[in-house]
Length: 320
Image (cartoon, rainbow, N blue to C red; front, side):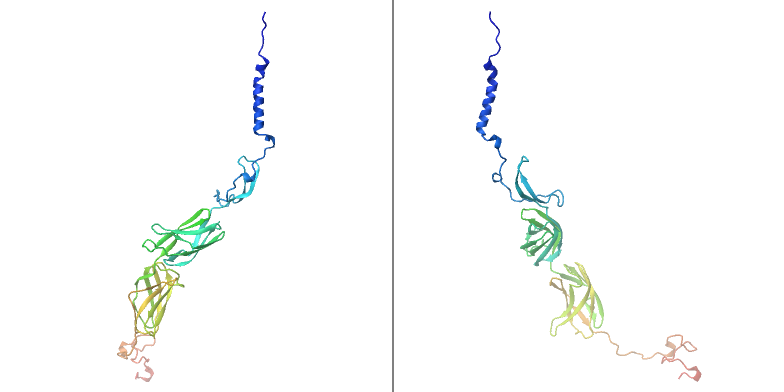
């Protein structure tokens, strides 16, 4: 009589054997599993400082530590610098002439990393700074306004600051390049000695202020004569002021010259003629008869003056 038998002990132990074998294999592959270290500094490539634009001005600015991707052990301190994006708020001067070479002062925030300043205008070659001295709030940029000449040069230009890692900030149309001053019309072309003559000049590309711009009448032949004007207002297209014409100024046709704040000059094509002051040599008649005299409170009984202007003496019974 046969008896029922359960599974053999070998079949029951097979899964355990397989698990134990797998564990042994893993221990062979990683002999120091329990003592494993997190990656060392030498095994990680630390990038150079980069520019990261924060969500708001000043937010997150400063040195930052780099840690491994799993949030484990710190591997390097202050390896990443988070900096604010540069901001430009103003420039000075705001205009110049073609051929101008000087320093442009740019104001703003977080400008210490700026390495160059570029001015751009559609259809024109860029104007790039030849030297930059930056600080946190200002930049002194050396610029020479001599791009290849063409008719599109004159007008507003964009001003862009660029950092060493490529971050940019731009003021659109902040700088104007203008042509030479040109006087195109004057409301006066003559004046008399000893008089004050108001004037208005119309033209284009005038720059400066009444204190920095000058207008003068000039006679170039020896002896040279200059009659300066008193300038009272200046705009890009008009100049207003007065000429005080001396009594002893030579009677000539004078050149009218405008000298702008940067030394540029414009000569008006129509000369200014200086005329002799009016003089009185004789008066005829030299007296008026009594019946043509003027009335006043000291009149005679008939309401008339004597011809010689004296009041009649009625007490003497005669007005002779």
